Length: 243
Image (cartoon, rainbow, N blue to C red; front, top):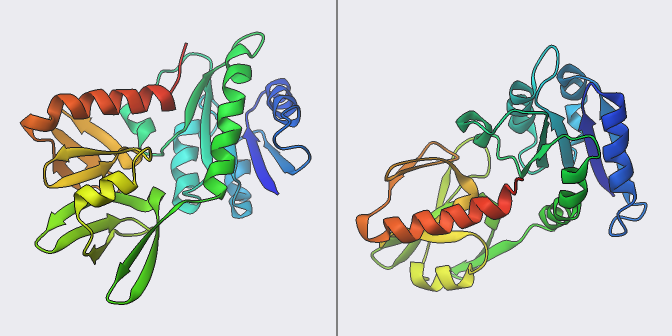
């Protein structure tokens, strides 16, 4: 069962989003809808741990950006979709890891075009993929979406991951190159010969410096700069499709 929240002060827009989801054949009847007219209402019910949230950016009271920050403090795995009439993404917006920006229009054309991808992302996140690492006879299962970066060490690699309040590290004998191929297609890329980065957990890129979800900063080497920039642009283009 999936929990879908729609937070918007426009009743008709909430209804249109609900109808689009209900019409999707993938979900059938396996969905519960939660509607909220303000950020305050949503945050009062945050314990529901929704799987998907459609959030209006412009609302009276707590706006969408502030609501999203508070929401992410509790629910880090939900698919977040910002809905807006005119506001473009800002650097602050990336900190809450939105999956899509939907521009509102008279016939909800963008919502119709994006809905299948959004639903598939929600389903995929509920079925979290893991990286299994064996070290000293013990098997560790790390959710791939928690991995920040993987770096080279003397006898293998160090996996830095972010399960919640602070980042942690796990050391293994597999090389960065081996793990890079195992994680092919999962959004990892070399930013330096010494480490690969999970692009899904980047919150800011400034020139040749990456900031990750836990505020760790990593340099992009000159030799990797162009390829990394191209791959990151492709990653964002797929994730934040816009008209």
